[in-house]
Length: 186
Image (cartoon, rainbow, N blue to C red; front, side, top):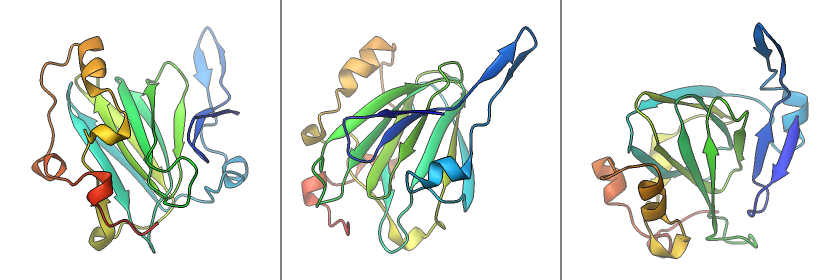
């Protein structure tokens, strides 16, 4: 397993080992012992979502005391995955990072507790997989406005580069508050 540091404190791109030949490949994509060193010590829940091209999901988080760390990957299609450090004591608070995830680039993203997370699907029928280390608690679910200009995410450039005319968001995500207007418990 190869870990690549991102610009955000404690957030890593994971490249699982991959062994292949003319028949295909084998990849141990989750080894708890290795991931526990990052702070991800066990899967409590595994989720998948399916999205059409241009669907934006996020930016979501779960507040304390049930905050969640995630390991995310795309198993079909492609997406630009986006994270924002929302830990007020962090050196990278309010900063964002994005990475292209596809089944072919052998990449996952480790999203630590205290981060908001989202993505935009670049193809129809994109299947996104989440491994999560804590129970879902709907009463602690939160989010920040996906296009908050203070976060430095150039959505317009992403949309232009991947031929997305109009992003598709849920009503809830369209009406979130900016980070500096949100009461976050990290």
